[in-house]
Image 1 (cartoon, rainbow, N blue to C red):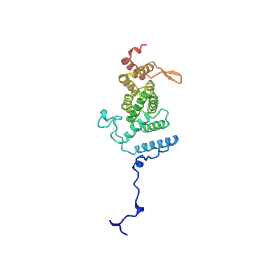
Image 2 (cartoon, rainbow, N blue to C red):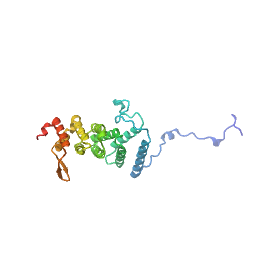
Image 3 (spheres, rainbow, N blue to C red):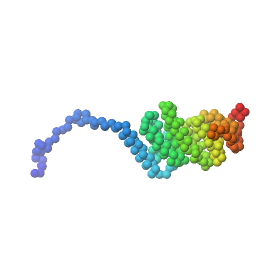
Image 4 (cartoon, one colour):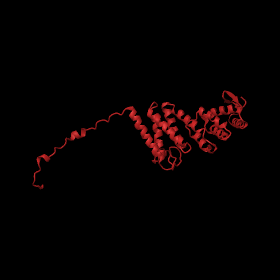
Length: 261
């Protein structure tokens, strides 16, 4: 039967008007809490998806770590473009702000390290960005993560740097938030390598001139090299003339008093 204006609707079609107070008071139940292992698995899976997607993005365009390519102003420190660099910056900031004893934080740091080591030359800006975040976090919490990961990256790239990497490697030393005495001592391997001796002493010279906090460690290394202190298998071995002369040249200019002491 068609409904007209004069037709009275059936009573069973009438619906009660909901109580407005009941609608306002309604709340969704809180979500169930995931166990720690499930959180770790989901977090690791999310990081894996992000890193995997990064490999499929456009070719890397180098620019200073954390800064937009078009501007070096302080306003551009914020992420303005969603490219693969932006994702890595987010992950690096997240890793440095997680609690020191957090398993997910350790997992994230390990994944960042693995990503950087895939091609450390291409990822140098991202390396500096991450280590800067860790250094800042250390200043706030005293966690010691900066030195741990900076030394690990240093140890892994040092065997592979070549003369053609001189500008890149010196820039790496210049952009590190802090150069430790342990890192300066590791430059010895470059100074003792006939094919990389120029790279080693150029790095020391740069630190002597432009990184004053590392000066004492650099002078100590040059003194050891100048005095033929090359300990191999518990014995002191003589250094070649080029190494000794290069160390002497730096000492004459930056610490002449140490040559006669």
